[in-house]
Image 1 (cartoon, rainbow, N blue to C red):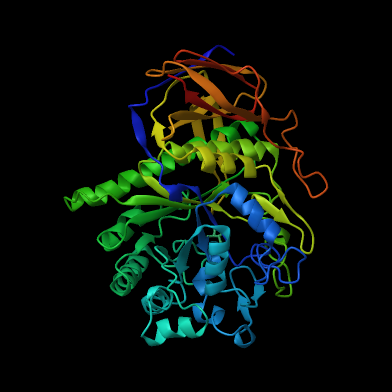
Image 2 (image 1 turned 120 degrees about the horizontal axis):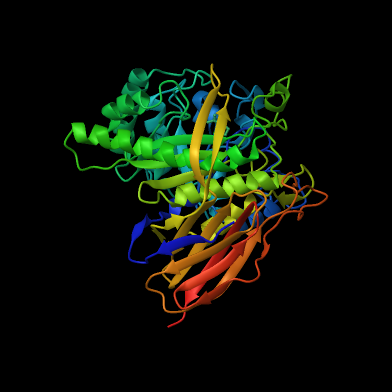
Length: 515
Ligand code: AHR
C-alpha cells in the first residue's frame, strides 16, 4: 500500500472526551449478574458475593459508568422486588429473556458493586409496564437523604447514605416491538416527559436520557427522535442510540467498514436533535448517550442461543465468543465514538460479563478476557483528553454492509471506505495517542503522522492487536491466544511519526513530546 498521511494540529480539536464515554452495561440477563459479577459461594467471592477475579478484570478494563438493570429486562421490572431482606424477595418470570428472576441482586447490591468496582452507577427506570410514579419513587428511594417513607426504607434496608445516582435512562428501546409495552413515539414522549418532570422534582441534580431509536434501521428512525424530543426537549439532557454490528454475511471487508455507519448514525441523530432545537429557537444542545454498542450477531437470532426452555435461572444465553476479527471492528467502533466526543458524552459497551461481553467466567471457575477487552481498555486508559481533528489521506475501498434486522433485509452501500480509520487524543500530560485500524486484509500500511506543533517526541507505547487467523479466540483453556503485542519500528523525528501497521490490525501508539 502507498504511504498513508495523517496531519494533526493540537490546537484543532473535535472536542474533549467526557469520562462517561467509557461506560459499560450490566443487565439481569443470562449469566451477566448471576454467575458473572455476583456468585456467592465462588472461591473468589467476597462477603457480599462479588467475584474478586471479575472485579480485578473490571478495574483493568476501566469502565467509568455502568448502566443497570436493563435492557429489555427493565421494561418489566418492579424495582421494589429487588430491595429489602433477601429472604422476602419474590421470584418472578422475566418475559424479556424467558428466565426466572430470583431478585437476590437488586439496586442496593448494584450500588455496592459499583463502589467496589470504582465506577459510577447509571440506572434505567421501567417505562414499559410501569411509569412516572414508579420512576420518581425509585429516585426518592435512592437519592433522597432521609426523613420520608421511601428514603427511610432505604436506610432501614441498610444504606444510610443516599446513593447519589446522577444519570438516569427513561426506559429502554421503547420503539421495539420486542419490548414489554412498547410504545409509539407520541405515547412514549408523553410518558417520558411526565416521568422526567417528577424525577427532577425529587432530585433536580440528576441528568436524564430519553430513548432514541433502538437501531438506525428501525422504520421509525428519525421521526421517533423528532417526536420524542418535541415532548421531552426541556426536561432531558440526552437522547440514546443503540448499535450492534454484525457479520451475518461473512463479508470481512464490509464488517470492517461498518463502524463508519456508526459515524453516520451519530451525525443523523445530532441533526435531528439540533433541528428540534432550531424549531424552538433554542441554544440548548441535546447530547448523545450511546448506551448500548458492541458487535453481536452469532447469539442474536438463533433461538437456542437466546432462550432456554423451562424458565431457568441465569441460563447461559447470549454468550458470544469474540474473534480477532470482531476485536478489529470493535476497535473501529471505539474510533467512531472518540471522533464524536463533542456530542457523544456517554457510551456503554453492552455488556460487561458473559453476555456479549469482554469478560467471561466459568460458574465456579476462572474468568478471562475476550478479544474485545483490549481495544476498550486501551481506549479508556488513553482516550481521555481532547480528540484532535485528523486530516487523513488514505486509499479507499467499496463495500456493502448487510443488516437483516427487522422485517426487511437492508443493504448499506459504503462507496469510499478509507483503509485507515483513526482517532487521535491529546492528553493533559502533553502526549498524543493514536488509535488506528488498518482495514486492509492483506497489506501492511506505511503510516506518516505529522503533528504540526510538535518539535520532538518519544514513543512511550506502541502495541498492536493482529493475528493471521481472524477467527482466533480466547478461551478458558487458552485465555491469552489474542492479546496486544509491541509494534516495532515506530519512529518519531521532529514533528513526524512513522510506523508500519500490520494488515488487519488495531494499533495504539502514544507519543510524549520532548521539548
Ligand atoms: O444487550 C442486549 C439487549 O439488546 C438489551 O437488553 C436490549 O436493550 C437490546 O436490544
